[in-house]
Image 1: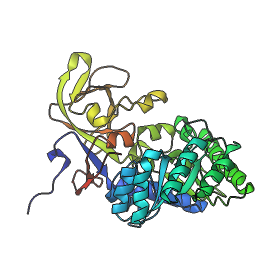
Image 2 (image 1 turned 120 degrees about the vertical axis):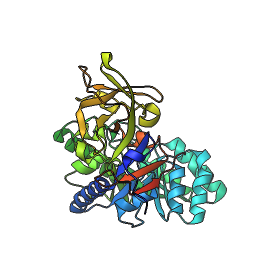
Image 3 (image 1 turned 135 degrees about the vertical axis):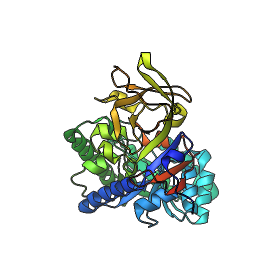
Image 4 (image 1 turned 30 degrees about the horizontal axis):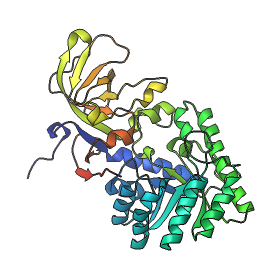
Length: 378
């Protein structure tokens, strides 16, 4: 019988995934939301993998959130039917969305303004198709959406309803939670997210719309929320893997991060304090999210094959296929012999995962238990 593959035997760079950490992260969020009495609508954009999603959801084809129509199509093919496309819809994407409806998907769309509502309404009148729609609300100035007090909320809802669409309710994403660094900040952002979404839903209901859905979410606020009365679902996805940004925000430990890039030492510049690895920005991504946090982790924290950080080594610079490993803040080099395998914890799990086509699955050790495909594209 062939010996089991180990991390030492893999071609590098590649993506390693610790299934035990994924399961523990999933259980933690499930317990928290169960205690608050609110269901999860898992965001699958981080994993982009039916195998990972099945592990997180225990094999249940539960409602999911996607960020691309490619995700919606792939997860529909994998058996998921209740799908929220949580990026503002443009008219040129509507035929693909309509095709999913025709196949039996319970697809919800998102938009954040009257022009988008009018474009969707015109398409629905012309094609005789009716979509379920959420209106995006901005509760923290992070990105898209209307203020919860915007008088256009009922106007948008009426525009959609008159075209045959169903206005399901409101959605918000507290992206500013990624700028937090302590529990007080996180709890404040989570409360503001909840209260803003509920205020927008009340405005729609006062105008005669049932607006049954109040959808909120981000990984930090999902974990920081202390009360979610009136909220009907929470969306989160990065928690499945966690990453260095989430550790800097304060919602996980380094030991909780399930994703890493396996790399090999290919050279050194001792006089500069550098070790060179074969994982550059093509493997790690260019994400520098921790640069804005109290502890700058460069392009990733360097760990041994068992996932333990090696001193204060980080990837300080990247080229396309080269990573430069050095001490955080400079100083004498930690010698890593040629051929040494290391694992790099990522700043942003979504961005790093997007550089790869598959996960090599381990479970607390170096034995590769499986290879799970992931997909890309829009």
